[in-house]
Length: 396
Ligand code: TTP
Ligand code: MG
Ligand code: MG
Image (cartoon, rainbow, N blue to C red; front, side, top):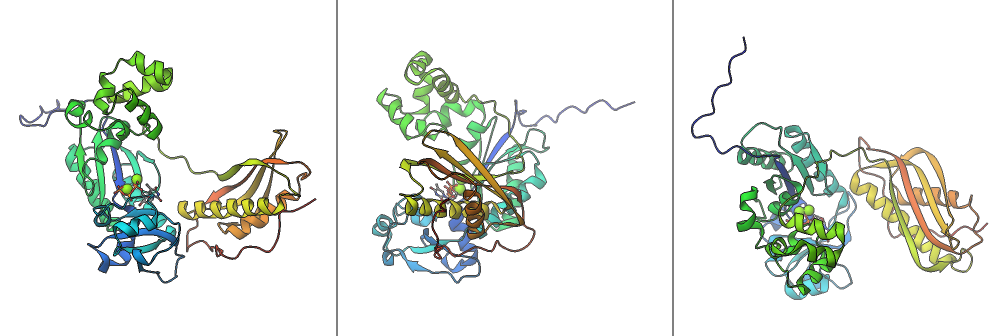
């Protein structure tokens, strides 16, 4: 006969009601990865940006005040943030705030490698994991045994053991609140929130702290006198619907009440990556050949960068064209060997282009790579960004 379940111990913490969803985000990710290579810079303001470094290349390290150009900061250490520097800030402006900060070029290969490492470490403990980009994931802990804080600590320790890096975790009943919670005590934070914490911890935050309320919506809300999440929760939902439409208006109100039932979606294997651009004005293959060439080269280089960041190579390269008539055509070309090399992608895209009519103005050009795989060994063979090919957009 099965034994009756033992009663819970008298001092057991209150049971968790509903789901238990974590959001984990790495702290100052690119900068922290750089500090693994340059531990002597620890404790100093460090900014990543102003160019990139290829694997094997020696780092180009300089003071921010030596920088001249139009680059932006991709991220900054918390020491640099204390001086006012943040992601997306122009480096010249950052240099005015933190002239002595160290500027390092980005090394995307390495960020991708560490990204895969931290995700794999978490997946060992909690397999239901949703990839949300290079430095963050959602994890469904509902079925994972263990008390919430202890479990979150184990995730943080696993990430540190695998990478040497710190992260911040929020654990709450859903993705919306978890994303907010992971940001509340950065860096190296651990924040557990239940719905009871909503008035005290979430409602005082500005509306834009909700993922999905961007600068535009937040400006419109402010114009309606709604600044905090609490203001939004207290608003009449009919006013929100009148201002923002049914779907977004209702979502705003639900979000402000901390309601979100989206599941944590375990990533499907990435099938293809594409980049495309719609032109400001239609471009003619003959008259605007230079411009089209530049756009094509740029798309292929971006695609190469995407592959590098995601740690993939692909064998099938495709192009997409949209004519001024809005007719869209695609062609693809399969290589013998998978590649992540922008030059190889460009060559394949050119051979695709030779198979379409180039006699009308174009609205859009896109490049796609499919049949993706993860290379087992070594970094992709990157072509130098600088070696601009000596050819033009094909004519036929
Ligand atoms: P974030 O997680 O937004 O920022 P962060 O990890 O640098 O800092 P935090 O401790 O606040 O989480 O972004 C992750 C990485 O993505 C970041 O290290 C650099 C890159 N990134 C950009 O390239 N451009 C951007 O505008 C932002 C915001 C990030
Ligand atoms: Mg981060
Ligand atoms: Mg992030």
